[in-house]
Image 1: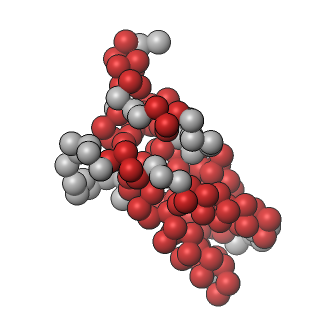
Image 2 (image 1 turned 120 degrees about the vertical axis):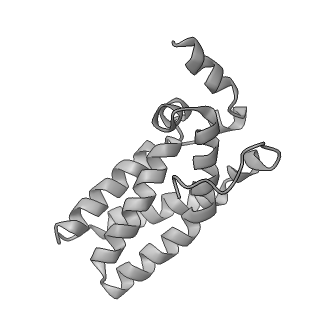
Length: 140
Protein backbone atom coordinates (compact mmCIF):
# COMPACT_ATOMS: atom_id res chain seq x y z
CA UNK A 1 0.00 0.00 0.00
CA UNK A 2 1.18 3.51 -0.79
CA UNK A 3 2.63 5.14 2.39
CA UNK A 4 0.77 8.39 1.64
CA UNK A 5 -2.49 6.47 1.32
CA UNK A 6 -1.79 4.65 4.58
CA UNK A 7 -1.22 8.01 6.25
CA UNK A 8 -4.52 9.32 4.84
CA UNK A 9 -6.38 6.29 6.19
CA UNK A 10 -5.03 6.91 9.71
CA UNK A 11 -6.71 10.35 9.71
CA UNK A 12 -10.15 8.75 9.49
CA UNK A 13 -11.99 8.04 12.77
CA UNK A 14 -12.01 4.32 13.53
CA UNK A 15 -15.79 4.05 13.79
CA UNK A 16 -16.18 4.88 10.10
CA UNK A 17 -14.30 1.69 9.26
CA UNK A 18 -16.92 -0.19 11.27
CA UNK A 19 -19.91 1.47 9.60
CA UNK A 20 -21.82 -1.15 7.62
CA UNK A 21 -21.77 -0.47 3.91
CA UNK A 22 -18.84 1.98 3.88
CA UNK A 23 -15.62 1.19 2.07
CA UNK A 24 -13.46 3.94 3.54
CA UNK A 25 -10.43 3.21 1.36
CA UNK A 26 -12.61 3.42 -1.79
CA UNK A 27 -13.99 6.73 -0.52
CA UNK A 28 -10.54 8.17 0.11
CA UNK A 29 -9.42 7.02 -3.34
CA UNK A 30 -12.49 8.67 -4.89
CA UNK A 31 -12.03 11.92 -2.96
CA UNK A 32 -8.26 12.11 -3.13
CA UNK A 33 -7.43 12.59 0.54
CA UNK A 34 -8.78 12.21 4.06
CA UNK A 35 -9.83 15.85 4.40
CA UNK A 36 -11.97 15.74 1.27
CA UNK A 37 -13.32 12.34 2.29
CA UNK A 38 -14.45 13.68 5.68
CA UNK A 39 -16.01 16.67 3.94
CA UNK A 40 -17.89 14.30 1.61
CA UNK A 41 -19.15 12.28 4.59
CA UNK A 42 -20.40 15.46 6.24
CA UNK A 43 -22.09 16.70 3.05
CA UNK A 44 -23.70 13.30 2.48
CA UNK A 45 -24.96 13.04 6.05
CA UNK A 46 -26.42 16.54 5.99
CA UNK A 47 -28.42 15.94 2.81
CA UNK A 48 -29.25 12.25 2.54
CA UNK A 49 -32.52 12.36 4.50
CA UNK A 50 -33.76 15.43 2.62
CA UNK A 51 -32.74 13.88 -0.71
CA UNK A 52 -34.58 10.65 0.12
CA UNK A 53 -37.73 12.61 0.97
CA UNK A 54 -37.55 14.51 -2.34
CA UNK A 55 -36.97 11.29 -4.26
CA UNK A 56 -40.03 9.74 -2.63
CA UNK A 57 -42.06 12.88 -3.45
CA UNK A 58 -41.06 12.66 -7.12
CA UNK A 59 -41.78 8.94 -7.15
CA UNK A 60 -45.28 9.42 -5.77
CA UNK A 61 -45.93 12.20 -8.30
CA UNK A 62 -44.73 9.94 -11.13
CA UNK A 63 -42.00 12.47 -11.99
CA UNK A 64 -39.28 10.01 -12.98
CA UNK A 65 -37.10 12.66 -14.66
CA UNK A 66 -36.69 14.75 -11.51
CA UNK A 67 -36.35 11.61 -9.45
CA UNK A 68 -33.48 10.47 -11.70
CA UNK A 69 -31.76 13.85 -11.32
CA UNK A 70 -31.99 13.70 -7.52
CA UNK A 71 -30.85 10.05 -7.46
CA UNK A 72 -27.84 11.08 -9.56
CA UNK A 73 -26.68 13.40 -6.76
CA UNK A 74 -27.04 10.68 -4.16
CA UNK A 75 -25.15 8.31 -6.45
CA UNK A 76 -22.19 10.67 -6.66
CA UNK A 77 -21.95 11.41 -2.96
CA UNK A 78 -22.54 7.75 -2.07
CA UNK A 79 -19.54 6.74 -4.12
CA UNK A 80 -17.50 9.59 -2.66
CA UNK A 81 -18.02 8.24 0.86
CA UNK A 82 -17.49 4.62 -0.18
CA UNK A 83 -21.16 3.58 0.07
CA UNK A 84 -20.70 1.54 -3.08
CA UNK A 85 -23.82 -0.62 -2.87
CA UNK A 86 -25.99 2.48 -2.49
CA UNK A 87 -24.12 4.13 -5.38
CA UNK A 88 -24.64 1.10 -7.63
CA UNK A 89 -28.33 0.93 -6.78
CA UNK A 90 -28.66 4.65 -7.45
CA UNK A 91 -27.00 4.17 -10.82
CA UNK A 92 -29.54 1.48 -11.81
CA UNK A 93 -32.45 3.69 -10.74
CA UNK A 94 -31.02 6.76 -12.45
CA UNK A 95 -30.38 4.90 -15.70
CA UNK A 96 -33.88 3.39 -15.78
CA UNK A 97 -35.40 6.80 -15.05
CA UNK A 98 -33.42 8.52 -17.80
CA UNK A 99 -34.29 5.77 -20.28
CA UNK A 100 -37.96 6.04 -19.30
CA UNK A 101 -38.04 2.39 -18.23
CA UNK A 102 -40.03 1.07 -15.33
CA UNK A 103 -38.10 1.14 -12.09
CA UNK A 104 -38.96 -1.75 -9.81
CA UNK A 105 -40.56 -0.53 -6.59
CA UNK A 106 -38.31 -2.96 -4.73
CA UNK A 107 -35.23 -1.09 -6.02
CA UNK A 108 -36.60 2.30 -4.99
CA UNK A 109 -37.73 0.94 -1.62
CA UNK A 110 -34.31 -0.58 -0.95
CA UNK A 111 -32.62 2.66 -2.02
CA UNK A 112 -34.80 4.75 0.32
CA UNK A 113 -34.27 2.32 3.21
CA UNK A 114 -30.51 2.49 2.71
CA UNK A 115 -30.63 6.30 2.64
CA UNK A 116 -32.67 6.31 5.84
CA UNK A 117 -30.18 4.01 7.54
CA UNK A 118 -27.28 6.28 6.62
CA UNK A 119 -29.27 9.31 7.78
CA UNK A 120 -29.77 7.63 11.16
CA UNK A 121 -26.08 6.90 11.70
CA UNK A 122 -23.82 9.38 13.43
CA UNK A 123 -21.40 9.89 10.58
CA UNK A 124 -21.59 13.66 10.90
CA UNK A 125 -20.20 13.74 14.43
CA UNK A 126 -16.72 13.30 13.00
CA UNK A 127 -16.64 16.91 11.90
CA UNK A 128 -17.54 18.59 15.19
CA UNK A 129 -13.92 19.15 16.18
CA UNK A 130 -12.52 18.87 12.70
CA UNK A 131 -10.44 21.75 11.32
CA UNK A 132 -12.15 21.54 7.94
CA UNK A 133 -13.09 24.87 6.43
CA UNK A 134 -16.64 25.30 5.13
CA UNK A 135 -18.23 25.92 2.79
CA UNK A 136 -16.35 24.17 0.04
CA UNK A 137 -17.68 24.25 -3.46
CA UNK A 138 -17.50 20.59 -4.37
CA UNK A 139 -19.39 17.43 -3.44
CA UNK A 140 -22.54 19.36 -2.54
